[in-house]
Image (cartoon, rainbow, N blue to C red; front, side, top):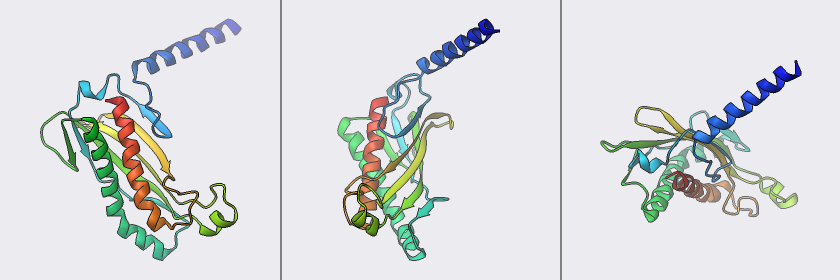
Length: 195
């Protein structure tokens, strides 16, 4: 019995290692990353399509109804900040022949699909009285890269608390635009390592 269990365990470990050896290593630019690519992006794709992030179904934490309406109004700007920062970083590195917003024709396409999963407005009182990162404002997001056929190439998830998010008494209205820009920059780091 012990030999059978040991044999099954060895088969499982060997097959797991074989599966993970076929995919590219994680870029380690975002907190949760799953890579399905077996070769660099540049081998098969020359055009990136950046679709606008969705906010549908997002959770609103530490947000009242008035703030929720304000976040809804600022969401298009947040989407632009992500796309603009991602585009600027990739163009600076000469990554991709073409970068398009929402749609493109021709080329070998890789498509970014993302969504905000949480808007957390933070708490100035917790930041002031507790500190140590309590009460920080943040944007939580997730998404994936697919090819033109819809085949999933990579998935990701992360939470952006950058730009003084935990050390400042700035409000979410001042922090979210900078955090969205940081999301674009982090997605660029993710793509550059896979390119």
